[in-house]
Image (cartoon, rainbow over all chains, first blue to last red; front, side, top):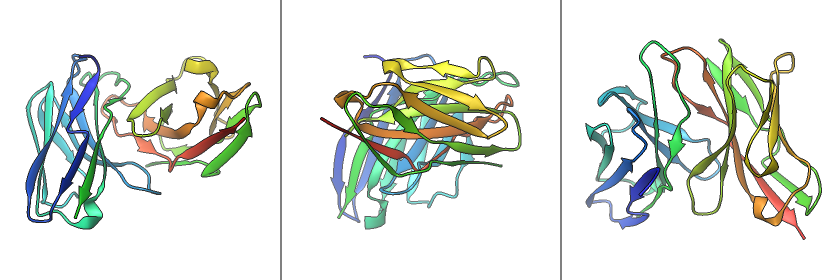
Length: 116
Length: 115
């Protein structure tokens, strides 16, 4: 497996369900990101983990909970979601050098989430 | 602060014709600029990037973009469209500072290629 992988690719859940999205990067990067892509809107950055520490939470509702157990894996735990949370959720990774240059973000294929 | 404006949410060209997708940016620091492509039901794939080296950047599949500081533009071109180029294209900007990793995306331009 190469690049950035995401599972599942498609997910349908009810508003009372709890589910998790998984992202794994095989690029040796040390920063990982969650984005939300809704129709007709720009990509929205949700969370950033740099060196396994969360460095940004872009005013995301608490029903979304990220977890980064190591630099290769990133999870997004979902609970009591709303229909408006239906979107494509993209994971990305990059190599960041503290105080130095930053590198390109590489994206996974996304998880298409539908909340009923 | 930084922002990206992509003029035209939908561009339609004939196969073999020139493709021009427009991107204007604003940034308070020297920018890094990116073009990503998204094929149906897939994630974003990097086409090309500008990181303060040559102002004319060549990417994959015959695409290139030119950084014009005076016009704050980074338009994407391809001299000859192929059916396989049909996709959505996103321009993105980030600051060039070491800790400024946040990418700001435009709303995207959907490219349709007609036979």
